[in-house]
Length: 170
Image 1 (cartoon, rainbow, N blue to C red):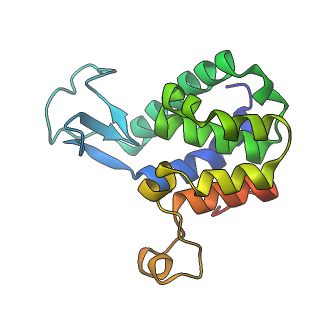
Image 2: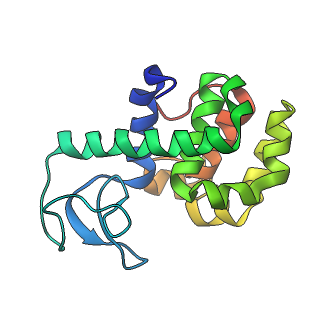
């Protein structure tokens, strides 16, 4: 990783946002999955080929680190200017790229242009006004839904982090 010091905090966010499952399972898209959203159909691991198989938490976190490193390399290959972002905003982009994939993140081109120009508040508003925000949750911490879930929505957290440059939820 280009910024190994952010992995510990970013991994906490990703575990909270994606979940951590130590048994292989089929996700809503029908893909065999384990750990923190690792798609075993797209990126197989030796010995993990059916639902219900278990791995250790340590292995799940190692897989997560490798997945984040691959995502980061792909993200920076496409948008080298992201190296200039502060750690909190860089982590927002890495979190979104991990969640969406770099190809789908590229569909956020107006938002990415705002981030590149340093217009973080406007970028955060665009993030919250996206289909992605509806899918991952855009409810603020003082909402009823946040109280029920024990945390705000992923989109709200990441938009707030983009806007302020301060880590959220960690």
